[in-house]
Length: 237
Image (tube, rainbow, N blue to C red; front, side, top):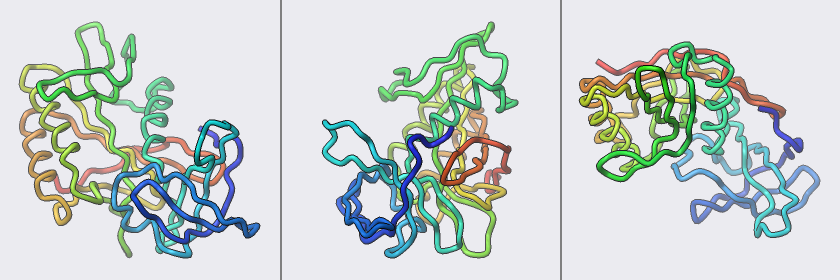
């Protein structure tokens, strides 16, 4: 996926009220932009850090700018727009780049399912039945480590999705969780037990129920982003 129009650059001043951020562009313009991320963004929102943002020409938008990428203190690039993960996975699925999920005959997004009235990111149709796929965007990294972690904040919603997938798996339906790692310099991902032990426990229960866990990494620049490799998943024992 190429960013179009081209992203603009600036420096982060402050993120506040979760969905807002004040930045100063390279030309000295002060802007309030939309922050499309509900997490803590632990290593992605350092004041003074470099950011890239898209700008919409839609006159109906209150905030034309959307925060897309951060440079982390480790010098990595992180796509903090969590909505991009599903787009990347959609592109990769249709291109046959996720080897474990090829051969489907139809793809639907945001399908209602489950006892807790969730919506799954993707439902893939195969000749022998459906596959339910949930995608999580990963941006949390650490100094001196090539292993990313999820989540970066307590996520009851994420645990609910795992319960829904586990229920499907117990019923004999194929259920998959895919971590889309939108952070450069990463070789593997693990559950962030130290941040959300309840999520880590739900992940282990989902695996025991038969949910398949995958992780793929994205190649990221300020011009484009695309899934390009499979990653290891640690901490599942």
